[in-house]
Each structure stands twice: as structure tokens, then as C-alpha cells.
Image (cartoon, rainbow, N blue to C red; front, side, top):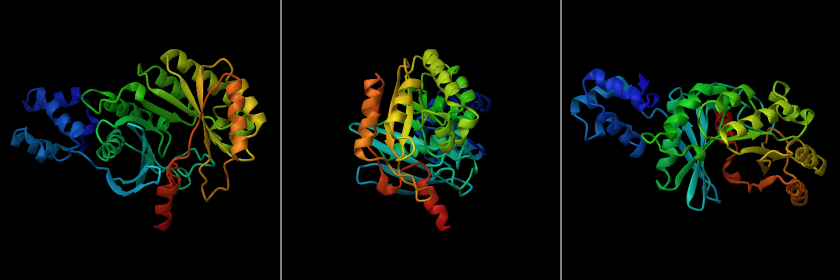
Length: 343
């Protein structure tokens, strides 16, 4: 059966009209699902009994299940989710003052094999449906105080722009007033640099934030870390990101995982400053979260600060991100990898 969260409110209204029910019932149904987190049609008490039975016989809701949750010493929460086919995916809740950012997966596994990322080490399984992505967000929301749940980042397992149609459907529901009601500027899509996907996203009329995993300022280093660079090299990627920023009036963020002896020396900082010159963007510097299957280590404090200061001196906005959730394996794919290796 179809998951009811695959429908927009217009789609649900059309179904209800066919069944002989008024349009306002759609708002009631989605109010139960998105505002109250209720997936059982039988408990939607303000609906007629016959309609509840009709819904239960025609749709499902809430197919993603929470298998385990881990809480880091820094307050980061890591969620291990189980899908209907028993595959595993992950989500993270990152608290910051009075808000919580939900980091959710878009695929089970990943095709793109970035060297420092655990998501692709077990290979690609399948795309997630829009409803499964929304389920992740709803489960994380249920573990937060409602007013704290304010931001959503598509940055968990998988490459969001490789599952484009389902991603956009999920974004529109998360953004919609009848859905989760999260403002577009509080929704971020993170990508390893799929240029056609970025170009399509720029045309959607959605002012969502774009976060691009860059991790190196030159093609040789980036291709060694991220094989996708061989298809979409840095010059083309940066040009595409400049176009996205101009089209959407949104600032692009470049994620830069710092790896000792690979991409964290002062020369790399100067190269990065050169390729981003004149671009109103932001760089997030992230000391690498070590994965046991790969031996990369974060640089020392002095090297990290020298890199940061070189970018600041060049007029580039920089954030030095504090590692979060290391004690619970909060980096993408680490928890799933740990569980599947046990199986």
C-alpha cells in the first residue's frame, strides 16, 4: 500500500473527494500525522469511523522504526532506524542553544565512496522514498521539544541529489504549512558535488541552503578523496555553485573535512582562498571524524588555526566546527556500519 505521506495535501483532497468527503478532512488527517506525530488512523478521533477504516485499508503511515538511540556526552543524539525491508539508516539530532537540527538520510548506503566517510563502505542498497525521509524527521521531532525542532539537513547516509525526485517531494512536505512547517532557509541540502542536481535545484523556486562537500582546493587531492571529482571537477563545481547563489540569493556553504597530511597545510589554505576569491560563501572547517577502516587523522590545533586564519585574512567567512557526537559514532554511516558488521 502507498504511504499517505507520499501525497501532497492537494493529492489527499483529491482522494477524499473521490470517496465523498470534504476537503477539510485532509487538514485534519495531516494535522494528526505532522503536528501530533500520530500514524495510526484508528486513533484519529475527530474523523468518522468509516473514513478511518477507509484510510487504514488504503494507506500506511510510519514505516520507518526507531531501532536504537544513543546520546553523546555533548547532547548529540544518534538514531538507528530500521526500514520495512530490514535495512538500516541513520539520523542525528544536533542541539544548539534553543534549537535542534535534524540530520537525515536519503539513501541506504551510498554510491560515491568518499574515502573518509563510512556511509559507502557497505555499498549502495537503495534510494529512500520521500515518506521514509519524512518519517526520519518526524521520529527525531518526537524526541525534541516541539519549538526546538527547527532545522533539517539532508546530510546523513547517501547522496541527496542522487535521489532527486524523492528529495524534492520530501522538502516540499517538510516546508509546507500543512506538513512540518520548516522554513526553506532552515532546510539544507548537502551534496558531494553533483552538478546537474545543483542546477536543477536552482530552478525549483525553493530558497533552501546548499552545502557542498569540497574537502580540497585542487583536483588531484579532491579526486583522491572523492572519486566524484573526476566527473565534476572543481572549476566546474565552483562555477555551478556561484550560479546557484546568484539564482537563489542564498549563500553556499563549503564543507571542508581537515585531514592531517592530506589537505590541512597552509599551502592548501592559500589555494582554497584563490578558488573562492570574490565568492560570497562560507567555509565550514571540520576536523575529520576518524573511521577505523581508513587511517585519516585530524590535524593538530596549531595547523587548524593557521589554516582558518589564512582564509579569514583572504576575506572568506569561516566556521571551525566543533566535533559533535564522536563517542556515539555520529559521523555519517558509522553506527550502521558497526551494526551490520556484527550481523
